[in-house]
Length: 527
Image (cartoon, rainbow, N blue to C red; front, side):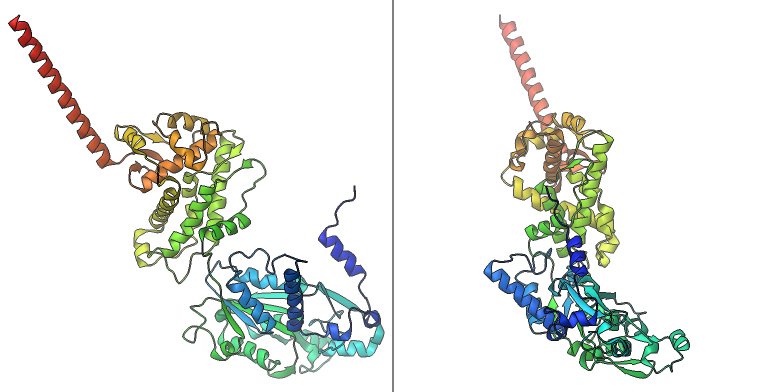
C-alpha cells in the first residue's frame, strides 16, 4: 500500500523543479516578470480573492485563518477588507486575543514559493533588483545569475517591540568590517548591514506591541510607510522596499495620550479591534483546540462540566471588580488551568495505579499557580490577596455551572445527612474506589447525579468526580462547609439548628415517655 506523501516532502520536490538560473526563470511560463513583480499587497489580495471564490463555489471550505475561533463575524471581515484595500493595518486588543496568531496566519495568503537573487540580503526581485549587490551581480552574470527561492514562512519577519530597539535593529547600520575588507567608502551601499525591515523585503513585517517602540523608531517606520526612504548614520539610502506592514498593540497605549506617535497612527490604514470569546461555548472550543489533554500514557477523559467551569473562571474574572480590566484576562488562563487540572488527575491516577485520568473540581483548585499569574488585581484585590480572590472566582464559576445542571434537583436529603453530623473527605491520597466507598455513606447522593449522565455502573473515577461537583455546588451555595483539606461537613448554623431540633425532639420524646410512665402508674394504682 503506498504511503501518503508528507507536505514537507511535497514542498521539497516542488523546490527541486524550480528554475535555478535567471535564464530558466525567464523561460518559465509561470514565473513571468508581471507575476513575480507584483507587490506583496497585490499578491495577498489576489490569493485572498481566489480563496473567497473557492469558498463560494464550494471548491475549498477551509477557513482563511485556520485555528481562529469566534472572529468570523467580527474581526475576520475587517481584516479581509483591509487586505482587499491593500492597507497596512494594526490589531488592537488585550493580551491573549490571538493577535499574533492572526498576523502569522497571513502567510497562508502568500505564494508557496517566490524567487530572489541568490545571496541578496534583501531578497531582490530578479526582474527588478533594488540593491547594488543584486544589480552588479546581474550585470556581471546575466542569464547565469543564480536564483534562490523563499517559502511562505521565509517571507514573514516578526519583531517584539521593546524600548531598547534601535534604528540599527530595524533599518540597519554601517558595517566598518565590510568597508575595510572591500576597500569601499562608508557611504557605499555595499558597506551597509541591513536590519530586519529591509530583510523582510517582498514579505510581511510584523511588529508586536508597537507603542513600546521609541518615538524616533516610530517616526522612521512612518517615513518608510509613506516615502520608502531609509537613512543610515546620516547617509540617505533610497530603497523602494516592498513590504506589507502589520502591527499589534494594546488599546490603552495606542492613543495620542499613550505612547504612539501621531504621524505613524495617521499612516495606518485600518485599526481592527479584537476581543475575547463572546460566549462560553466559543471559549471551550478554543480551550479544547489549544489544551494538551491527551497525554498518551493514560486514558484521559475530561467531562463537559469541567470544561465549562474552567471557561467560566475566565468569564467571571473579566467581570470581577477586583481584577484589572485594562490588563484583561488572557484566553491562555483557561488553557493553562485545564492542563494543570488534567496533570493533577494524571498524577493521582499514576499514584494509585488507575488507568483513567478523570479531572475533578478539586483539581481546578490545584491549578491556582496557573491562574494567579494570568490576572492583575486592583487595589481591593491586592489587599485581599491573589489566592483569596482566585478562590472566590472559582467558587462563583462552580456556582454558575452547578445551577445549569442541578437547578431542579432537591438536595434536602443530602444536606440533612451532613446536618446530622455526617462528614466526608475527598483527597488525592485516596484511590477512586476508596473515595467512592466513603461517598456511599451519604444518603441519596448518587441518585442526584443523573443530570450529569452518571450512573452507578460507571467507572469509580467518573462517579467520584460527579459527586464532588455536586458537593462543591452545595458549598458554593453555602449549604455545606468545606475545609482546605477537602473535607465536607454541614454549615455551622445548619448544624447548630439541627442539633437544637434534635434536642427538642429528644426532650419531647422524654416528656412523652414520662407522661406514659405516669399514666401507667395511675392505672396500676386504681387497680
